[in-house]
Length: 191
Ligand code: 5GP
Image 1 (cartoon, rainbow, N blue to C red):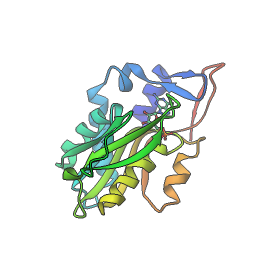
Image 2 (cartoon, rainbow, N blue to C red):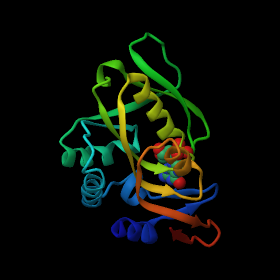
Image 3 (cartoon, rainbow, N blue to C red):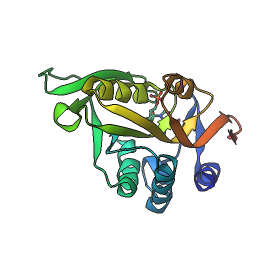
Image 4 (spheres, protein in one colour):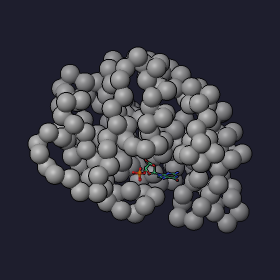
């Protein structure tokens, strides 16, 4: 998606450790006009899928998922991150490793909001090593739901997440795929 790539070129900042900062339009301040175009594009890319719910993860996936949901006319469920949880049998739980914070979290979704009748589109801001998306897939599978696809704003194609998820046979559509980036001279190359 050219509009998103343009913003990344203009405002993206490459940090050490393969982290791209896009706080000015995605991860802190949010450009809703841009999100709107992203939502429209996700709808076009998944138009043939019988999606009845969008699943994302807090925090940065929520804004993108909510705007996209208006094009699908479906509710959004977000997985909550928890440092430690009481296992009460009321929630689906899985562990993920945070790419940016290098920590492990439990993520949880209440059993009330996922069921075998659900056809899920997973949406997130970044795909890096695929841990967050794999965790969300795990939760949908625990609920007996169907994964219809994964929609990502920015995929870092030089990390293993894209391959990991696509080899599970899941349709992954990323609006911008970064082939390489360099924190020394600040360059970003797209696939
Ligand atoms: P993964 O689980 O695929 O390794 O990482 C995905 C999650 O880590 C996303 O939900 C996103 O919040 C965060 N993340 C991964 N890489 C980046 C990055 O380069 N920049 C930012 N801002 N977030 C990232």
